[in-house]
Length: 194
Image (cartoon, rainbow, N blue to C red):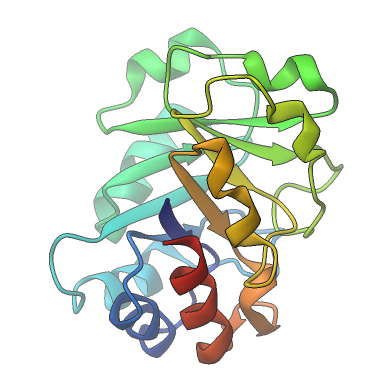
């Protein structure tokens, strides 16, 4: 499974994840998040990173103009859209994007089944709540285009391999505190996912 470490706020955390073999890093452009980072601070990190690592900007309740400008300013390579956006918004984006499904019930995970998508547990706040989805929902469905998030950590990620998820996304499960990663947890998470 491919791995994404989300809520990156420092160059050292980004490099620790890259050295451990991460596929993607997430930068939270949502001001109400304790992991919020400005596009200019994200750029300071991203501009020093090696190639071949996806840099994902996370957005909540903003318009296409904001998404396009933040992605351009920061140097991110993909936008992660955490809210119910209109088709019009997606048409106005100049950059690749991935939709997020905040699943309340089993049928929710079947949305956008022809697209790569991130599936997270529904909660009032957006992302990083560490809430786990009911894994039974994924039995007997095609998970090859799903990136699973929510309540994951080094000790439970290996058990997901049988489902055939495209990838897994973690934030709070590898942290010491909001936005500060614990390198041993990051390494164990990536190792166990792969």
